[in-house]
Image (cartoon, rainbow, N blue to C red; front, side):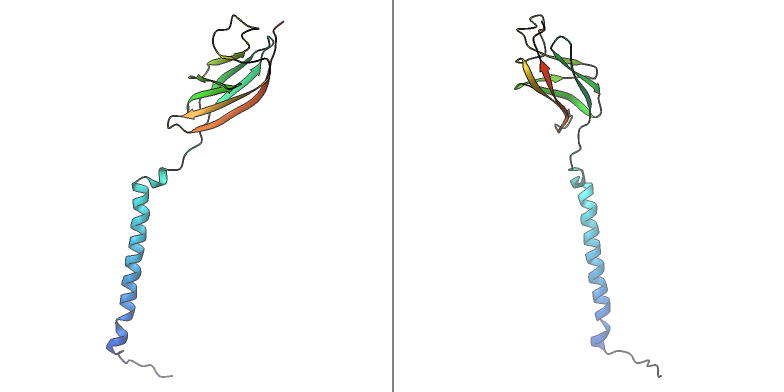
Length: 144
């Protein structure tokens, strides 16, 4: 076997460096685009789920109570029942769900009709994103 030490002619010598430069420029452009997307905040556009803990409980007097038990990353809780909505603003706060004809002494909360009522608690984050925390059907009944 014979080893050849011939120098390639001018047409063949420039091909490899040109391809190498093109590949390096392409890699640099792609890398710059990825870094720019994170620096400009495109990577942060994914929304987070809002988390909080709430309890819905039926009371012996025919009413129900919603209690905010764990803050998580929620700014407030929206409670909806029987087409009405009310906001709970802090951990430990409660909201009564009742029928005013049966409980005239209750002045705050959600005044709903008697019977099965679906209660939905939605956690609202500081950025406005919302997540349903809990949903339960309760019986609102005559207290007597």
